[in-house]
Length: 358
Figure 1: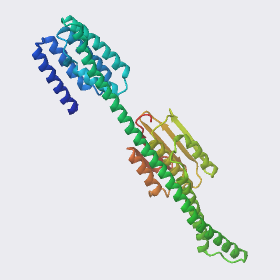
Figure 2 (figure 1 turned 90 degrees about the vertical axis):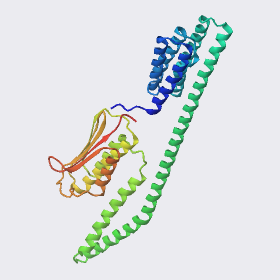
Figure 3 (figure 1 turned 180 degrees about the vertical axis):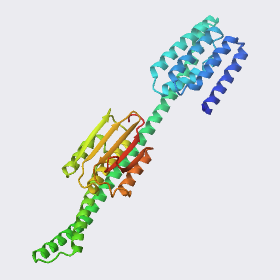
Figure 4 (figure 1 turned 120 degrees about the vertical axis):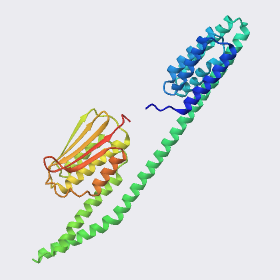
């Protein structure tokens, strides 16, 4: 069902009524009314195709002036469309149309028997209205550009503050937790070493503390790496991410399909974080099994798949990482599927709508 834009409908109705009333007073014929009707109806689309509508309404105004009478009011649709044309930055076309209409008005007035001075003055009055409409278009365009620039400035300031806050949190975590965990781990290691040196059985509690300390250090390092990374994680950095996983002992391959292109920052950030979290889960739970990362650029969506050949158990309960992935994908209107793979192991697949290039 086609939904009408009520403000434009009201505009068309108002302009049509004004022109029809003027035409009735001037005694216009059927052709004149037809030209005015076409011009008024075309005005409805002046936001969607301003250049085309300006040419059409300008032609109707010129034809009405030559066929019926050189009435300035017949140029009202072209006058309104001129605003939209200039507002969208099509200044050369506005100048050409204004010049043609000016010349046509002068010619129509002369053919109507008006003196040359009167013809020039009347055409100049119409030109003044066109110039005023064009100036309003320029002003509105500058206002919109300044509003967009202010919005970008606010976003950049917010991102900068967020980055500074992440670094501050990372420093606090490093200074407070890393030192304490390191001391616990060192003291536990010394106690285990002394017990073994004396030939005593190492208490299970000490071994559990040592293992928990090592896991806590790894988790803390991963958290600090995330906090210290710049916010601009893009898909161009995926090879580096996979290479870091290989350097840490994880077998991983990266395959990129489709036509790589720059996408919106939100989509690229989500895809990067999904791959990062999925590789972290593979390292923790897949027992060193090989992992495959596939990124496929589609015309309307970006598909990210991370699969491993691990044993599979331990993945069924969604952890914080999977919950975070699902929240990222859902926020973008996409879909996330995570579970046992068709040939064993575990698979994560995210379909992210891209909506074209950034």
